[in-house]
Image: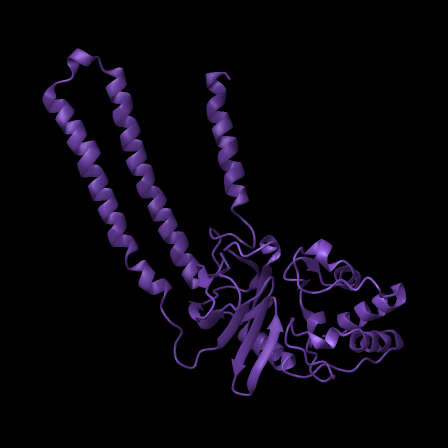
Amino acid sequence: MRPHRVPRLLLVLAIATTAACDGIQSALVPAGRDAERIARLFGVMTLGAAIVWIAVVAVAVYAVRRRRERHSHREVNYLVVGGGVALPTVVLGALLLYGLPVLPAVLAPAPDGALRVHITGKQWWWRVQYVTSAGVVETANELRLPVGQRIELQLSSPDVIHSFWVPSIAGKMDMIPGRVTRLALEPTRTGVFRGACAEYCGASHAWMAFVVVVTEPGAFAAWLGAQGRPAQPATDTVAARGEAAFLAHGCSACHTIRGSPAGGQIGPDLTHVGSRLYLAAGTLPNDPEAFATWIGQTERIKPGAHMPAFRTLSGNDLAALAAYLDNLR
């Protein structure tokens, strides 16, 4: 490669790398108070590393370009002590003093009376339970939060270690079987953000995502109130046939639909599943076609999932069941 093309290539790579850092799952585009602190810390640490790197490279270039007989012992001592001891000590000491106070701020608990949400990591989906004065409101694979409020997440797992992480809003926290860990976060702007399990947890670890929807406090309160109400019964013929198929084929043994005979606790609560943005923990879009695909081809879409694929359903029953679930809003 010609030397004059190297800077141009480096510039292209830098632009491509920076562009890749944008999006709904980027720690460098913060949308939460704690993510802002972490991004700031990352920037300062990167600057400190760059200072040390530049100093080391400058000393190396200087040593190579100078003739050996021109180096005096005093000059060498200055280079070793100054560049190898003094500068790293000062820079790393400053980074340590700057970084230490960040940890307590990131781990600061939510205030008394704050909204508390219990999240359980499953293989491979998320049970989400809002603790309210009227009781527990349960949903799955989607977390909705009010902007500008500090919320406490109570995290647990019944099977293996998971790690809850929404890079745009806060740091990550492990979910350890037999323990409840706590993570406080405070969204600072509205929008839809992606979270994921950051700890390898089995065959479908890569398909264990979720979305965080941050709205204004009023919109959040209205949403939470609607989620606490039971599902409306099917009103059209197709959806009614789907409801009958849901009960007849054993879906109610694993899933709850409040307001119906379905009361299973093994799988996700489906009371208002039609109002969620995605299906199967962020794997599929939420529409009737995706419902039918998920029900009929579960193992192909998410290997190792504990839900059986209902391949024995007729095409009409499968379409009716998908329509019924899509109408649960």
